[in-house]
Each structure stands twice: as C-alpha cells, then as structure tokens.
Image (cartoon, rainbow, N blue to C red; front, side, top):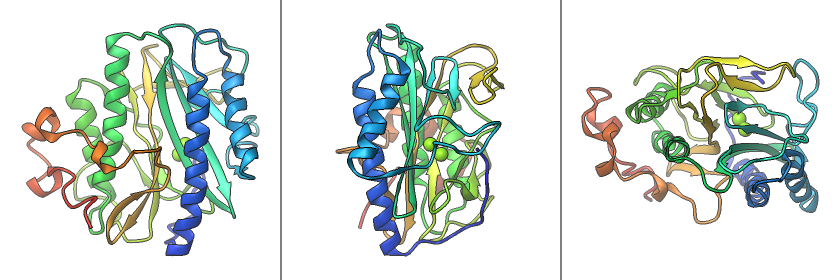
Length: 293
Ligand code: MG
Ligand code: MG
C-alpha cells in the first residue's frame, strides 16, 4: 500500500469530515477489538468492523485496495509475528496471541485510518511491553506534529522511544499523508533524523503508524502476497492514528473515547527523555505545548 498523490492541505471543514470518518473508524476498532478472545476467528473480528461501517453508512478504504490483487477485506488483522496487512479468515485466536487490527473508513470521500494491537486473554510480559511501547511511541510521535517541526522530528522521536525500550521500528513501511486518498504525501517513516524531511504545516493530515518488532527489523511478505511478518518470527505490534497538524497543535482525528495527548507517556519514566544525546532539548520536551490552547 504505497500510492502517493502529493501533499494536500485540508480546510477546517474538511478536517471535520475527516474527524467524522475517524470517529466511525475508532468505533469499528473498539467493537472489533472487544470481540477478541480465544476461539474467535479473525473473519469474525473483521465482520464486527464491517457492521459498524454499515451502521453509519461509511465506506471502506481497504476493500479492493490495489496490490498484488485487490485487497479482499475491510480490515487487516495481523497476529503475533504478522506485522501488517494480514487478511482476515478462518484462523482462530489463541490465549496469549497479540492481534493488530487496522481499518480505514470513508465519509464524504475522506478517509480515517487507524490501528491498534490487543492481547488475547493472558499475554506474556514481553508482549505487553511491546504493545505498550508501540502505543506510547505513537503518542510520542504525535506530540512532535507541530507547525514548524519536520517529518524527521516525528520519525526520530518514534525511533528513539522504541529503541530505548530495546525494540525495533520497521524500515519498509511508513506513516503517510491521508485525505481523499488513503496514501498521500508526505511519507513519515518510523525512523529518521531530527531537523530533516518535510516542514509540517497547518492543514496537513498524517496517518502516523509505529510498526514495532520485538526482534530485528527485517520483514518478509507471506504466500498470500499481502501479509507482512517479522523475518525472525518474533512478535510485532502496530498502532496508528490519523492526526491533523493545526495552529493549536496536533489534533487526533481517530481518537478513541477518552484518548488525547494526555496519553503521552510521562517523560519522568522514560529513558527516551532522560539521556538521549539527540535531538535538542526543545525536540524532546514533554508534549508541552502540543495539546495546549
Ligand atoms: Mg491503517
Ligand atoms: Mg495507514
């Protein structure tokens, strides 16, 4: 999934439409992830998301997305070593699995794109730490989505945070602009250098999506030609939000209930914020300013 159509700045009215799509997408992820338990098929989880989109009359940006063959579902569901683009089907979830669910909803031609990873029953400490780190990395990245920062500031913050926890970010797949197309410019990788890349401007809408591997960052594509897995077979996790850059700071368009920039991990407890040589102080500062009016 790598179609690129240039940077398109959105008006306030367009942001509101994207937020409508984003709310439906958030609910689809909520209802889909609420079904996750041992013995449930990934197809049943997909069906829960389909039902939400149908209920609100939203379209899907995933079904028939061009690739090796048109993508055949409304969500991608990726289990354990599967990182992204897993195709829902008869696979039954087992206690201890971790499941990444990604969905794209369309309202009035605008896309909301978001993803999360949840555990099935009781999961290992490492799996929980991987999930927590990936989700926190998303919010660390979002906090950098300020006018005047560059995409590299966002990428570097995500990479530094993840690597400080002993995990790795994917190299072959990136966050991306999103709007009337699911994939617009700019690309926002999960690795990079502060002060590089495209300047962030108000009206940019970006799907930021840390994809994190417990082992090495190498991936492979499966026999179905869609599913991307870790090459070493170790666990992976994926969180994503569609976020607007605004003059008032980043605005999460796909937020789940009660979720906002307060969810950024407390800098006091994060080695990322403690002893990092780079980036400079103003880049690693707490989300201060990011969510304030
Ligand atoms: Mg997505
Ligand atoms: Mg995406």
